[in-house]
Image (tube, rainbow, N blue to C red; front, side, top):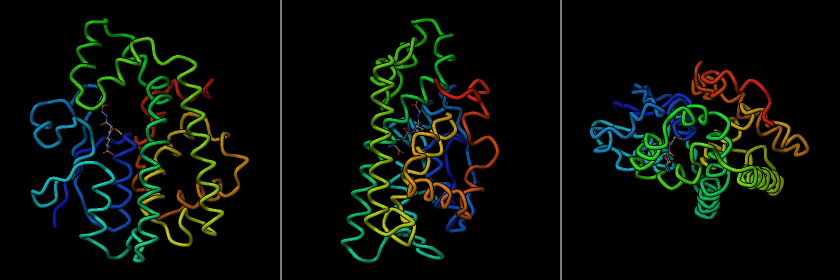
Length: 253
Ligand SMILES: N[C@@H](CCC(=O)N[C@@H](CS)C(=O)NCC(=O)O)C(=O)O
């Protein structure tokens, strides 16, 4: 089996897939795209992934797109040495419901502080025409980019995104309490944990770790995922935004 992953070191969706590949000890090669340079919008890449986003997995010539579809696919084709999907259908359905929640809430909300705090200086340096052309070339994120504009999201948009993230941490706390932890669904790590991991790591990288300090189960969950053997190879040097954008080393306002 040969795996080629089109991805970006700092992309949260890519980090989900790298984590599962590493946990399963599946060797893979990486094609690294520069998302700010627009590599994901080039015609050859759009033939693989018409959404114009990473990640994309090429498995022996079969193309699989979308991080949640890819990690479920990997669990199906390579259930050993570790399977992230519960055997019991009810637990499996619970896991999938949480996976959807993670995409709809924290993964969507985290884009607002990410773009405002990390990427904005790049966009602010473009002319309005260049920016609109760049935004219009994005199949999936056109409206998001235009809503942000070259001046960034408003304070109100930022506060709303941080509030959505806070509700996500509270939901995690409640799920861990219900399941008995240490993971969202109990004693075994599942794809639901993998789905939320990059948003939490991103917020810590943006200096927002304090936002879940009053939630002891989330704190322990965060320690546990960082101690997982797949974590270090997933977050190889250069995977954090603060490594690429040194201005982020200041705590977020
Ligand atoms: N639902 C997709 C979303 C993928 C996505 O948004 N990828 C981001 C990086 S995390 C991207 O490629 N952004 C490029 C862009 O906005 O142009 C997935 O989970 O794979």
